[in-house]
Image (cartoon, rainbow, N blue to C red; front, side, top):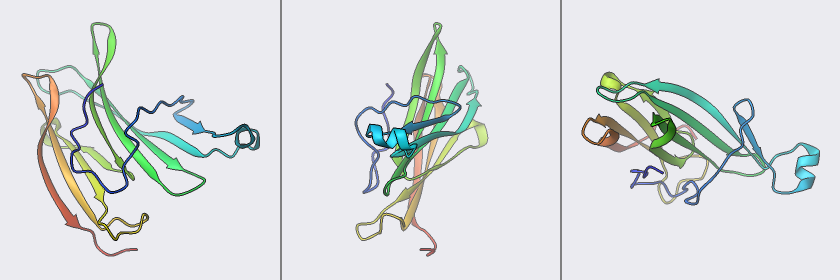
Length: 161
């Protein structure tokens, strides 16, 4: 698995352990007990909410999936941005970024990846991060991988909570 270069994480982080999903039509539901499954009330739901392809200069096309996970029976959410390539007939993960809450992801000029991430300060409520930062990743031709180019922020968010 590719390493997550997200060193400056939030107070409320996504799980550090491996997580697997069984998607059906882009949605995976998580049940902690049989009663939840029988009642049709999942503990959590994961959705693929972005699916895009980036073709970097002098590199293979990279398929990006952005997966959002939401705790339905309590608070909490995280999202993961994963990048995959086809290499020797196999799918290989070459990029991963995960963090609490939903990040904004876009492809910028020169196929640069731009990720906007919420940042919680020590006294922020779980619902309301007070800052954001923007991370920029570019294609490294020699390594055939995306690498972090720079980080802007953290920057205060306008008060909306």
